[in-house]
Length: 84
Image (cartoon, rainbow, N blue to C red; front, top):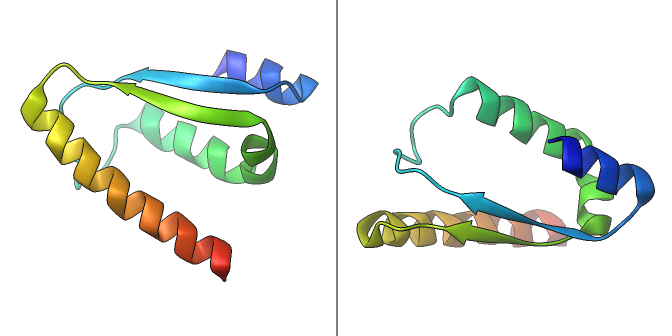
């Protein structure tokens, strides 16, 4: 979170690399995930202007498939919201 604050404060481009652990994507996220998601939502415009991308690092092939399916849903939602 600190690096994102610094990069956004300076307006510098950045990318985020996540080492993803296996958990059910439909369950309520952990408290730290909730806080991170809320922070991103509050800074959505700044984040969109500076964040160049995400890299998800997933070792488990079965979980990788679950994550890929979840990300397709997230992408569809983002595109729908962007179109208004």
